Image (cartoon, rainbow, N blue to C red; front, side, top):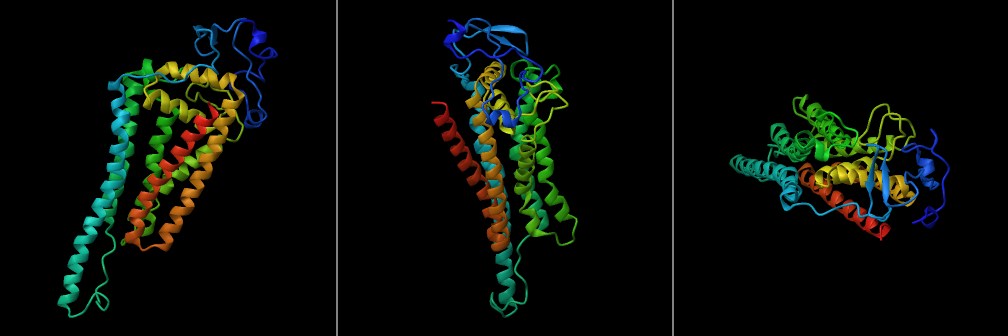
Length: 340
């Protein structure tokens, strides 16, 4: 097939227009990366490996990004959501509300023995215990820890199969693994600060999920600022222009958690390189998730400050998963519509 059949010719590659050198403004304008195709469309020159890959006469825009994987490799992602729901939502709520029910029963008996009802009891009702809340937060982190351990196992022990294209050392992992690990530490800040006070700060415990979301939102906002990255990030070399956060997250999630491997990273890079509409979609989805994070934090704050603690506790954890599922479904719908 002649090059003229697939689109207009583009100027030769320069330092200013090379791969991964496009800023957010250029993405919005629909700027196109210089093509790595030579003469015909049956082969694609991979800039990461200097190899030529057979594309079966198909452009990256036309190629399917994902492939079917073995059932054995899908086990972790199949059981992952139930484990996260169990440890991050069910376990904290069970621990807290079982404690609350037992202590409220003892409180009622104490009130009756003192000759007063629940309304006139001089003993204040139990609302929280900082050790119980600490145990709940610990379980909340176990769900994320499970996901992180599965990712690290694949990136370290199956490095050649799942690691970023430019990764040469097993311990380098990928961008999502490092951000995820640091986010778990950030989520502990409210617990540590609150526990430093004798009676604790109950409302601060409830902000642990919001701290995690806010941390990810900050990273997403930073990636909208055009600058040259000083180190390699995933499959992008040092010195290339930073891309929207979802660009890195989508590559890592599908390659590692989705068991698509390095071959997906190559196809994903080729699609991002050649498709202006694909780059715009990634940018708009990043903005969509930034807006979602802001909405989530605002709603959680409204719950914390307007409901009694015993109601706010379950509501904050439940709303986190409601928001994640809702935004994930809307994202999936968006991608399906855009990639028809």
